[in-house]
Every structure is written in structure tokens, then in C-alpha cells.
Image (cartoon, rainbow, N blue to C red):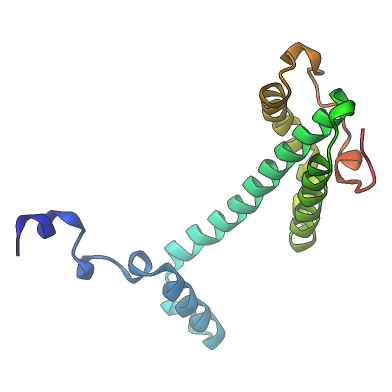
Amino acid sequence: MNQLTSHALPAEETLSEYERDLVAWLEKQASILRAGKFETLDLHNLVEELEAMAGRDRRELASRLAVLLTHLLKCQFQPDQKSSSWIDTIREQRDEIAALLEQSPSLRQLVHEYSQDAYQRAVKRAVDQTGLASSAFPTRNPFTAEQILDETFLP
């Protein structure tokens, strides 16, 4: 064995099945669950993956809200520059948020809270994209959760 390979990666045999191939490990855990062999589940890693999945959905909601709010602000504060691209981005974000909320209805209760945090990021993006000063935008989110989700609402 040469020096380059001895330090490159941990030996394959020292990695757990979970670390070697996540998809194969997930499929095996699903098979174990279906078979009712609960005592053989990798509970520690299974719990971590389930928590990570929930976190990904929450992060996706927050990220999509920030993009959506950025474009709503641009439409409100630069109406003469409103473009089909902006409208398309608004529609796409609303569609993806709606799909996420349909798949995970419990996230709906987070829309108001997350939109308040996402608004601060949206203002920064709107400043960068419009050239307007941050003082041109309201300090608090001017859009209600209903307006944010309403596919017919445009400022």
C-alpha cells in the first residue's frame, strides 16, 4: 500500500453500513420495518435521519418564502420593472410551497413565523437586486400569510 492511499479515505471495513451507502441503508431499514423486525433496526441513525428530513422541509419552506418575498417586494417597489420572469418566480415559489404544505400540513402553522424571518433576508436580496436603499422597504413584513400564499395576490 502506498502512502497516498493509506491516508486518503478510511478503510471501507471501518465504516458502518449507514456511512457506506445511505440509500441502501434506508431501503434496508424500510424492509426491516415492513417485516416487523423492530429489534434489528438501527434506531440511533434512523431517528437522526427522520429529524434531518423534518429539518430539510422546514429549511425549504424558509428558503422558498425568502425568494417569494424578495419578488413580492420587487413588484411592490419597482412596479414599472415588473417582468414575466418575476411573476414566474412568484408562481413557482407559491406552487412549491403549496406542494410542501400539502405533503406536510403541519408546516402551514409555521408560514407566518418563518415569513417574518425570511423577510429580513428578502430585504437584503431586494436591496442587492433593485439598487434601492434598505430604508425604502418596510422594517416589518407588509404581507400577511394569506397574501403570501394567495396565488392571485400581487402587490
